Length: 230
Image 1 (cartoon, rainbow, N blue to C red):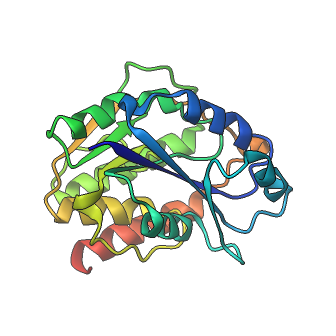
Image 2: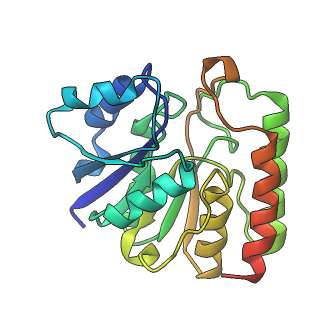
């Protein structure tokens, strides 16, 4: 394995996109060649005006209308050519340096999929909004009950995949229910799935956070749905 694809779904992140791209550029990702793909989900806040600055350093894909994170990632997975594929949000909640130990487990042949857990301790973590913390814990518990797993943080952004393992998985979810869908499908496929602790610098709604309690309801529905369907 010599190449990694970093998928960055982007929607109205004009204030943070350049900063997170610098962090991605500076992180080593175990020395792998980087393919950085931005999927702009019809941003309207001036984010698109930043793209000419990047001088074709990144592959930039566009949605003509806003479809959601899952749809953006579906577009990104179809375009990915790396041996390993990882997901990076365009805000500053997660630090790309935390990806290295997750990737190493795949490079060592121990894992097909590796999640970075914000809830397993051992790394800096900004205090969660209380209802988000409860929601995350409940969704992870429900995942474990339905799929016989032992995950602590199913809803984490940081997910690393061996591309050969997931290339045939078809994603149907358009919004934040991507997280339970991909988790359901890799677990049903028998993934060697590991978790490692990561840092978390969560933001609040006033700072641009987009996920709401409605997305939690959709996640529950997705977990149950994909337990019994493809």
